[in-house]
Length: 212
Image 1 (cartoon, rainbow, N blue to C red):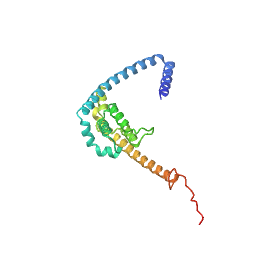
Image 2 (cartoon, rainbow, N blue to C red; image 1 turned 90 degrees about the vertical axis):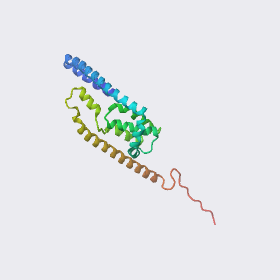
Image 3 (cartoon, rainbow, N blue to C red; image 1 turned 180 degrees about the horizontal axis):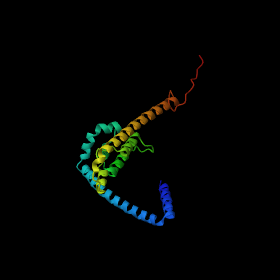
Image 4 (tube, rainbow, N blue to C red; image 1 turned 45 degrees about the horizontal axis):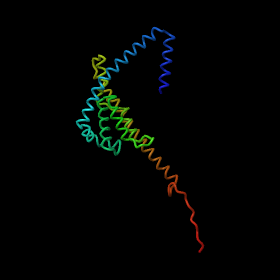
């Protein structure tokens, strides 16, 4: 992936330099300035949210949130240990509040807790990834904060469209994940039965008849 991005960067810079050198340098400088400005804005927003999440953990509010979301978490992720359960609850809550990349620490901790030590992602790990990528948001606070920082006159106008879009994407992801999980489980069971209908992994032996 790094090679792809480097190639795109080099090709685009080459085209700009051959076409118009003045435009190339002005574009690079302007883009760098905008990138630094955006990074500082996001830094301030994420600093606030990470501080709030730290307070949530220190006050053990995460355990109360975990109990509140217990039926949903068990339904989506199955049985998990207490720490992983709390991290999943914090991650879901953070996504609902639109905290953006501030959800990453809790998501990483939850993913480590769901990891069974194999090289294959479990259904619970895939479900967590889907919930983070689709990210159902009741309040897109990070985007609203960016719109406020950019001088938007009505930064809250995106709440309703964002709610519709994220609800549809999250619901579709959950349904597809559960459907694929059932199909894969059914295929594995069928494959096991076909391999050995009597005793799996054991060769069939012929019965020796003794003379009467």
